[in-house]
Image 1 (spheres, rainbow, N blue to C red):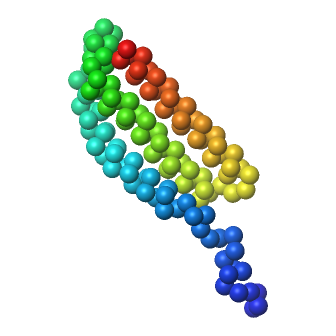
Image 2: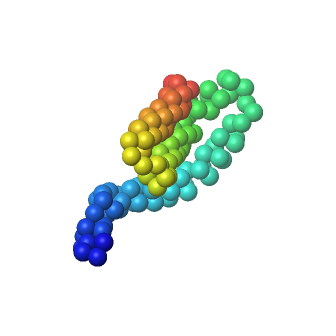
Image 3: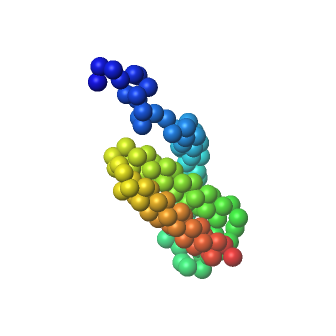
Length: 123
């Protein structure tokens, strides 16, 4: 250990050159959710308790449908980034790669199902 250089000790522990992009992605989605969540709560709250026909009529308007679809898409993107950070911190090796792939598929799949449901209601 006495003859190891600083570079040799840090080998494999350094940057993957994606930390800044990941950080900014999380910050942008956080700010977007800061705006979208209250809008979603107010638009969804006014439709809550209605009959199926009333919900269809309500989400056939572009405003509530766009807010709901954006909230779902941005929310699951933010979820995916957060879970990826957790997996990178606590899981290592091949398990890390498999877990990231599975969580990415799960979050994008859930977002696609949610947006499809909103589009189905809107059309």
